[in-house]
Image (cartoon, rainbow, N blue to C red; front, side):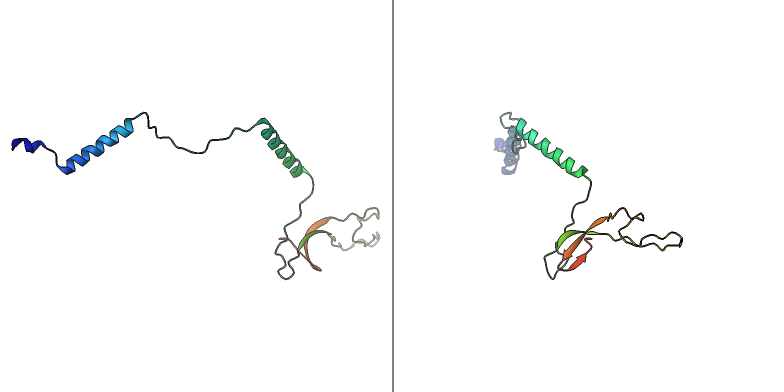
Length: 134
């Protein structure tokens, strides 16, 4: 009866087995725990060249003078056919204080009757109506 005192109980046996299993798994060099993901593909020289050309083309387009047309979708809910158009900006007429110098009151003239320059701006055209794009 005295030797039965040293036999482990079921609870002690489970704890010992779990500790032994944890020790074996963590110390085993054949089972390394590595994060697995997809392998990175190696880019070829042709792919890099194409990508560099695309980047250069985008930089050239961004450096060009001018503006791009606005998005006019949904500006007018009734027709649904809104499109971006460029329209001239009519400058405001300043009142002429000097009566001695008569300048042409043409809205498109800069005063010396040589130029007919008109600045342009983008508008959204929906049918016969023009809307500001913002």
